[in-house]
Image 1 (cartoon, rainbow, N blue to C red):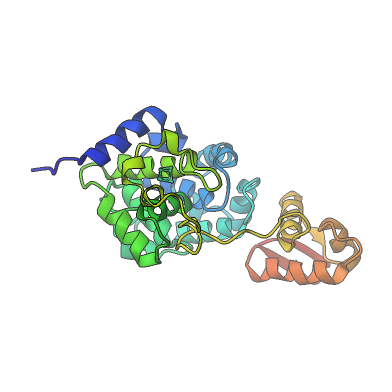
Image 2: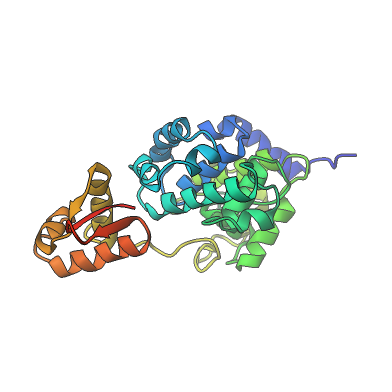
Length: 294
Ligand code: SF4
C-alpha cells in the first residue's frame, strides 16, 4: 500500500506544479539523455545547456553512438559549455557503458558511480530522473534549501540523509525536481524570496529570525566563491580548446601565447597548454610543432 504524502510534501509538489521550470530533459526518462543533461548542468547555466544538449543528443543519441565517435568529435560538440574535461569524461563513460553494460546505463548507485566522471550527485540524479528510484539528489540548489530548512550548516552525510529522508517513495521524480526548482528560483543564494516559499512553516532559519551566518556558509554541497573567469587560466584554456575545435594550433611559444590571449606571457601559455594535454584533451605533434584535439 503506497504511503500517503505529508502536508509538507503536498504543499511543495503543488507549488512546483504551478511554478516549476519547464526544462526539455524533464520530458524524457531516457537514461543517456538524463546523464548528458546532468553532466552539462554541473558547471554550466541552464540557458546555455539547452541548445547544446539538444544538438549533442541529435549527434550522439545513444551511448554507443558517442562511444564510436572520435573524442575530438565529442569535444567539438561540447562547444559553448566550458570545462571541456567533462566532454572527455563523458566520452570515456559512453565507452564503458557500451563495453561493460551492453550499451544500457546501469541501475545501481554502485555501478553508476564506477563509471568515468560520474560522482554521487550525477549517479543519484540518473537513478531518480531516469529510473524514478526513491533517493534524494543534492546539487547546490538542493543543498541550500536543506541547510536553510534545518537552520544551520550541514555535513555531507547530513544533507544527503535529509534529502533521502524527505523524498516520498511514491513521488521521487516530482519531489526532487521540486526541491531543485525551489532552490533555483525562490530559495536563492543572495536574496531568498521567502514570501513566495511554500515551506516557510518548516524553515528553521526563518524560525530563528534569519540570524547570521546564513546556514549555507560552510555547509556541504555549496562551493566556496568561484574565482573570476576574466584573466584566469581557465579563460586561456577555453580559448585554446575553441581554437583546437577549428583545427591544429601552433605550439610555438609566441603564437601559442597569442592564441590563448596572453601575447606578453608565453611561459604561462605553455604551462597552461600542457595542462590541456595532460587532461587528455589535446595532443602535441612534435614534428609539425602543433597541438590538435586528442
Ligand atoms: S523560507 Fe526562505 S530561507 Fe526558508 S526555505 Fe523558504 S525561501 Fe529558503
